[in-house]
Amino acid sequence: MGDDRRVNPQVRAWIGTVFRLALAGILFWSGFAKLLDHDESRQAIIGYRLPGVSGVLIDVLAWGLPAGEILLAILLLVGLFTRWAALATAVLMMGFVIGIASVWIRGYNIECGCFGGGGEALTEEGKEWRYTSAMLRDFLFTGMAVWLVAWPRTMLSLDGGPRTPVVDPDDDLTDIDIDIDIDTDADTETLEEPTR
Amino acid sequence: MSKADNAKTTKEKAAAARAAAEAEQRRRDNRVRLIGGAAIAVVVAAILGVAIVTSQSGGSTSADIPTDTVADAAVPVDVLNTDDATDGVQAGNIWGFVYKSNPGTPTMAIWEDFQCPACAQFEATNGQAIRALADAGKVTLVYRPTTFIEKRLAGTNPNSSTRATSAYGCAIDAGKGKDYAAVVFANQPANEGDGWSQQQLVGFGKDAGIPDAEFPAFETCVNDLTYLQWATNSYNVFLDTGVPGTPAGYLNGTEVPSATLSDPAALEQLIAEQS
Image (tube, rainbow over all chains, first blue to last red; front, side, top):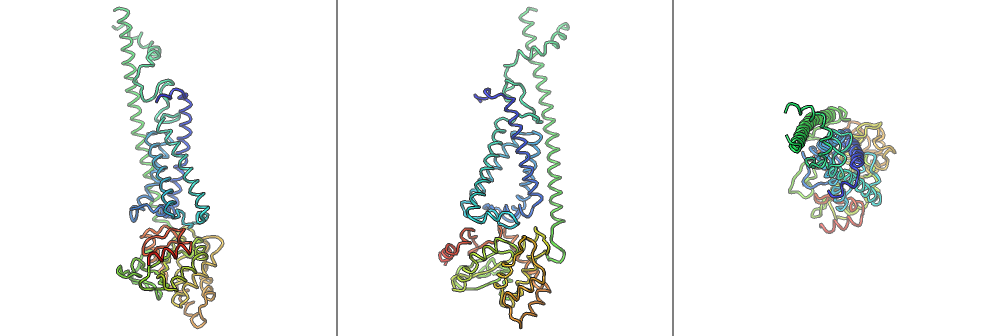
């Protein structure tokens, strides 16, 4: 990553922290709402008319999707397996985008106008705005997730922040910082010296 | 020891110390990953378990509404209670109300929930046109009731979808099925989910034009909740076949895109193409 060092790693790690926590909040809210409103989310999954998704598979998705979202939310919240969680989040968000686009192209409604909300999706104009805004929103979330895939080390995370200000976290075997290490280890070295 | 040697060992030792520190750091990282990952997995599994159990024990279905399908349930006249796959009308349309059968024409099935505002809107824009096509002998038309909205929106009158469907069955028996449905849709409450009282459902029969001579039988039929089981049977098919919502139209078993369904000219053309 050639241009890595142009951005201050500390700043980058803080930006990543903001993205991480934002995605965690979004995923948690989205997953929890699906669990609370299971019937509606089950109906919404049917609404995507995914080829081959019928019967038991609908129920597996209707429970599995919110469970997966909450899992990702917690991983991102505490900053564990950040890169993998962010990758899964990006894939999930792109899945939503593709799902919405395919339903739109095929001329169906995702919203059935069933449970109070969603009535505006029934007019063509309302549908256009709704689908466009949903896709833009998911693209934005995908961008945040991709950032975290590229730079998974963030502040306030269990994975840990950037290890040193200058060294890329992924090649910490290089000896660029050797002088610093010798300086800091100087005390232990002199203590051991007499036994030789 | 030369000064150079000394420097070298210092450097080597520093490297060794650093390697040890890194190994220790890695061990710590792995421990955090293992314990953290396991803890998170347990938390998510617990949340999912609670949600599944709650959804199955809870639910807004009240005790007097049947939940299981009964194959030999009483059904109104013109309602299919068999599913003969070789029969153009019956195939896949069990528990549907056959508005008009025109042998040799494509079969249009329409799913509606009486409490669904989009269905009322659909009936207003295209209901008459579709029935006109059936009356003109161009299509076989089957109406299929579902009751999913009441499971979510328990308003002032619980189970309104199921009770209205049962009353609709009574109107079908009296020969005024679609008139009755039109009255119910026209009288949807302002607040989705509030539904209707039994008294209202009886009164709608008058507006639907059920003759006085037949009215007492209709009233008894409505108040006895005669066709609750029929409504449940149809709702279960709705769930099992994964109908995406209401209104939904199926032409010869293939879903009609919503834009076409709500456009009389486009729908007529689609039907003509299938004929």
